[in-house]
Image (cartoon, rainbow, N blue to C red; front, side, top):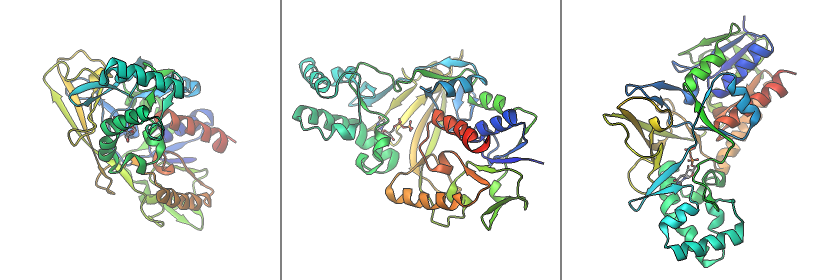
Length: 381
Ligand code: UDP
């Protein structure tokens, strides 16, 4: 009855379902383990009357026109330019570390000197990963790098990953570079916005189609079997492909071992006050067990006298106990993943897409772009 089976109703699954249903006029069944669509982008209006992101803050940002235009079919946008601050030594300072931060933490003559040296060495308007700045041979810039490393990165990264910054993939800390500009924005992309009525509504609009059925609270692994390089669903070979966006190790019964993830315990609190903090996100690199506090009212404004905040406590991922959020990049894990990917490649009616299936730290726009690309290159051929 269905042409395509899609496992998972996050962005990867939803984009592919929408494309297949509308562009190919084929029938799709989405199987979703949770009780809702939207994956980790899921949000809802909570008791304070504010839209909160149930799985932690999701700030959409992209330079990809195609992705922005594609998603704009399903939502209007509330423009929201994300700015983050960190509490360091009792002061609130802008993150990523930029010239505004520089002048807040150093005296003016010292900041003048460092700014001059940074521009001379790296140019204006540049993004320097902290681990790169640490290698600078100028003693003043070394001191600056050490300050940023010590005050902003080392303890936050210890909380977030249980590791030192140099022990994790350089691309992760490079997400928050030192900026040689006065730009306080967390992202520099052209489009920065959240869906006006939240992500869940966006997903609903994408998936409401006569060709799409959704089975919630349904574990696809109970219905999938792999035999002789063919994937069977409910004992039958589906007419077209099975698109799997879940955990690749779980799909293959941990044949090559479990792929590690980092998880987060999320603690929401609704307060009887209009606002709790001055920014949507305040990072706490050095104090407390949580990494950051998000106040959603700054992201989705609401006319209410209450507010909801979220504290994030990173922790180890445990299968069936908590949620896998971040793949843990090490050479060893990547090799393990490669074994799974090679195995999957031998199954012609299986497609793997998404953060969990590809073991990649995709941002939302990246995964939408990836799903659109998979549709063009591997489905609509
Ligand atoms: N990071 C840090 N201190 C900060 C912000 C970020 O050490 O104040 C590091 C940390 O290792 C983190 C990475 O930079 O995992 C990427 O941060 P980002 O805010 O992009 O993470 P996400 O929002 O995806 O959790």
